Image (cartoon, helix red, strand yellow):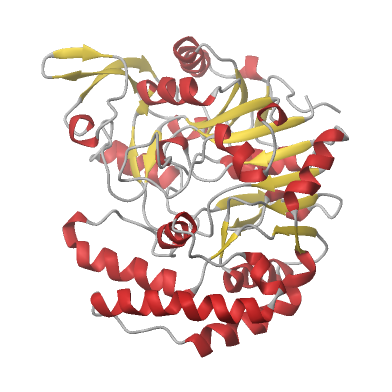
Length: 428
């Protein structure tokens, strides 16, 4: 296959960064198609940890072309900050293209995000406070600025003036301070000269790549359960992380994606508010959190931790067309006497094996658990699947049986070398 999409199968933070980095080293083009700097990939290379927010994982390879595609919301100042941070870490040579259709995230989006969460109080959604939702709202309302507006200063000035008249009125209603047009323009002018040469029609570029049978990796951000339409609404993100959304977010046909690698943790985590049936509030949950370093790449917030939920994973597989699975952080479960997996739910005395679509019902479900024996061995240095402890392999087989999809990759540690490859997905 020449194109591969990576999708998180849970609520994000599944360890996609490691696998996207692995496949990025084999790709010619790496594409990020949605979201903004609310998402993050934590990547370990040669023992050194890098935190990516907007930039694709191919940024470490100077021969790879990295694309920030149409469906993204891009904070220009945050992008420059991230680029400068990588340069300070020695990453100085890379190829980057930025879609002229990508939405531009500006300071008033962040101000509105904070003001709303404060007003909502206990009913808050639990956003990252980075303005993602308000920016996508502007896109849907046909009010927002796009990265292509940086190419035309007159148009930029006019559109910003119109937008601020509305946004400052909204901020005033929330009791928040207005945002200065002069300050925004000053910030944009400081980064404009660097960004303009990278801004182009990335849809045309990607169409050409597909026609030429280039090896293209579509890098996932966040997770399927945060999908605006199919996730645990309203506790979701403001776009769709599903692989099925890639075509509209990149300007490509449905046939552009040959295969979808669903990435999942060996347990479950989520950040922010919302239902979480298998959440652990005990010492085991704390142990998993600390051993798995379950703190946000971008926000540093501690993640909520729970047992693996197969009902969620089956739901995601069915709506996404997952063709292969990458199982991450299996090593974190080592040392436990027993491991539980959720196989379905009980609601009002009825047993169901699917995820209810409305949050009020989903909040009330009781997980049905199957208990599996754990393993005590350290598996972090195992390179061959057959060398894993039998109970670890049984755990993998339980996942494959439930999802009816092969687990093609198993991660047993954060570094590249700590990955068991059972099936190569990218053509040479």
